[in-house]
Amino acid sequence: MAAESPLTIEQVDVEMDRLIGPDIDSASLYRRWEKQQWAVSDLDFSQDKADWLSLPEGIRQVTQNTMTLFFIGEQAVTDTLAPLLHAAPREDERIFLATQIADEARHTVFFQRFFDEVLGVGGGLHAALDAVTPQATEGFRRIFDHQLRDAMDRVRLNPSDSRAWVEGVVTYHLIIEGYLAITGQRSLLRTLKNVGLMPGFRTGFTAVARDESRHIGFGVLALKRRVAADPAVAGVIADKVDELLEPAVRTVVPTDRKLPIVDPRDVPEPLRVNGLALRDFALSSLAKRLLAAGVSAQVVQRIRRDAEALYESLWTEYESKHGVRHPVRFYQEGLVTAPAL
Image 1 (tube, rainbow, N blue to C red):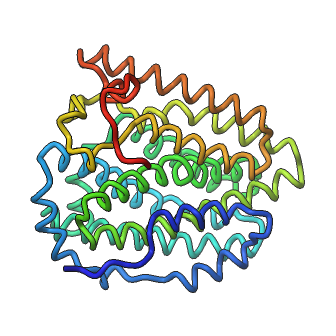
Image 2 (cartoon, rainbow, N blue to C red):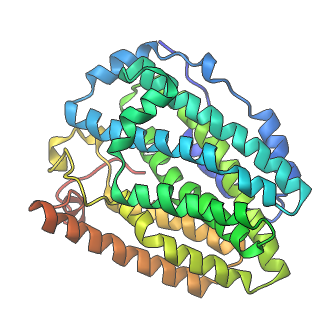
């Protein structure tokens, strides 16, 4: 059996909150990058192959869909982040962003190797991406194919546009990493830990999560610097979050495909995921980072209310499209329980 790293997602969560504190600067984030290196080639996926086949079919499908979105996302950000580095006005920011691009490339290689060796999706990086890309949902495509690429293009075409740079950081560091990624990471890692499966994947994916905790900390620091220099930037941050909120929530509550699991009572309790708890974790995580960046509590509370309304609207939209209750309703009505997130 593959040896597991002593690092846990709970420890990553604690560290992530610490990295938005007032004592964090770019030098301390860089030092963490130097000390927290890991190698994809060191991971052992031998046990993961057997564990994968032991999962119920519906759980495999849901899990592979989640992993697919991470794989596509890591490749997309690896390809698009360079303009943000080039346009960063401070040397320490450019240095940190260079480490981030290296991290994102490593994450892409991690998923490519896992998909090849465990899921049987091979043929090299491009073939694997071609095989998994059609599984992306509407909300995901809007965020990665349009919002992210458009934001990076604006920075690339006008590197001196400070507003475009801020909006790029909001898109990438707050929404893609600080809302979408950390929520999916926590859910998937805790679920696999509950059942003691796939130690190789859990070791690698926990290292991915720790890398991204540094990225999010950097994003908050960069935005906090701009707000301190010009309080009006807080409004720019809030406006960009408002623009991204609907496609972001639609990414985590897709309505364009029927879920393979209709009734969560059919799923063994250790493998269940409570959508209400997941929503609350995601929105609390985003709120912490917005507040740390300098957005007012009143605005953050309003953004959270808007997001909660979007979740409810999309759960209802899903039910209207597919003629079945959304699994979250079972948790809302107390008909089923799941392990704590």
